[in-house]
Length: 156
Image (tube, rainbow, N blue to C red; front, side, top):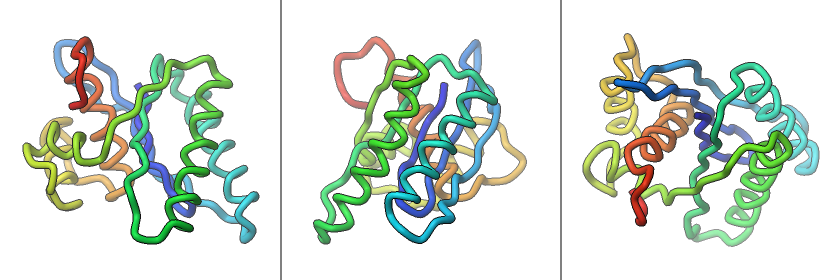
């Protein structure tokens, strides 16, 4: 399962496998390198495509857009999500979406958890030797949320 924490400059990704326990496979950040926004969207699309090709996930899970104070930022974040989702759809992966607050609730126990709390719980839940970078931890948290809630008719 591939979890994504979208961003117009840095998009976090996390790959886990489910079984008797959750197993960490990979995580990291897709950094956009091009200055113009359309080029950054292409970087996100190609980066997600490369992660899918490398790890062959069976599902794709992404964080929903939150309501931002700056409408321009919200639009860019929505476009970044779209680029990531397009790569998943192009690979014929089923797509699920979760609100950030719901992910935090599922992983930490409170919807108001800090990034550091999410990093810590991801480290504990996946038995990692160190906490992953914040964007990668958020992506892993989205995937963990999905695994823990499959079959339920509600958000995390």
